[in-house]
Length: 163
Ligand code: ADP
Image 1 (cartoon, protein in one colour):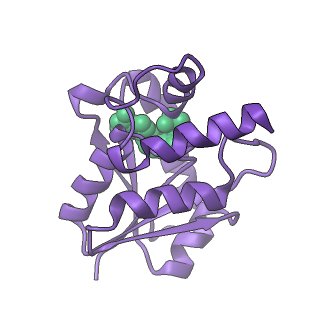
Image 2: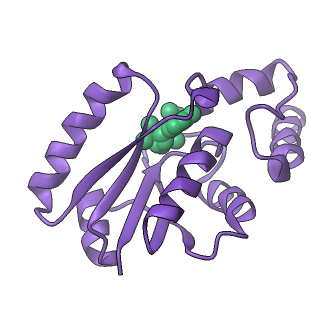
């Protein structure tokens, strides 16, 4: 079984991420979307909330699982029996960092390769950072975030302001 891992912060998941998940789901037998926990970077959403949001969005994709991990990615992949990491590339600027990471991960786990999917042209501008900006200015999120989670994302931000 060809298992691929799609790692990231997903703070929160965007339509750009979802596009990559769907394409990976068509290319591999199983895809594990993994929220990588970075204890030094506090996000807008907790890792548990991010996992929950992703689960809501991928419910209909039978071969997609959602998980979170604070392990080293190369070790996590070994543990899961995955030989492929999936990454999305929006621009040449993404490539430099991702290329370096791919080499490092290959050194840490020689059975692990990285596969890059070019961003769909509709989403090359889209990142979780852009979404957070849009939330801050109460913009319409329908072009950025999967429909199923728009209300939850907006509520989280409101609760935070009031709390
Ligand atoms: P970001 O904050 O940049 O969205 P993530 O860590 O959540 O970062 O991204 C996880 C992975 O998804 C990375 O490989 C990133 O390049 C990719 N990605 C993020 N946004 C998009 C997009 N709009 N289109 C394609 N790939 C994307």
